[in-house]
Amino acid sequence: MAFEAAYVAPHAARIKARVSKPVMIAGRFNQPQLAEQTLAAGDADMCAMTRVLICDPELPDKTNAGRVEDVRACIACNQACIGRLHMGFSVSCIQHPETGRELIYGDLSKAVQEDFYDIGLRERTEVPRAGCRLGVWCLSDITAVLRRERLPS
Image (cartoon, rainbow, N blue to C red; front, side):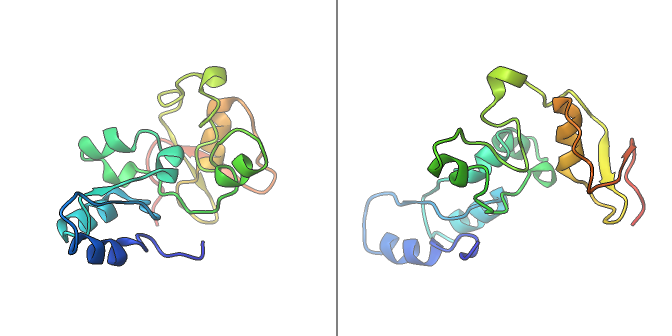
């Protein structure tokens, strides 16, 4: 993405200083901490979060439960959300492929509780996790291992 996260915040602060109405901004707020920092700094009164909610519809619940580390951050690739929308297809997300397909797949949030890891990167990866939840495996480029505990780094 060509724009850094919260790129509108400095402009909103200048507007907020000149008006008496609440100021709401949007512009790549991909983590709840970033929105909180913007609000705490007084740059705006509200932060709109769109693509991150496509990426992780459970963000508000995870944040309220103190599980901020579990939030999937939107990487602003625009491939499955805005890119698909502009081509006339339904919105989805490469990190949360069931988005936009809830009527087909239902609630898959509790379908698989185990973590999958890419052996080479030794980090969580959503590709095999989503593949397992959806019953589709596309692992030609990834060798994944199912673990109940985190692999050592």
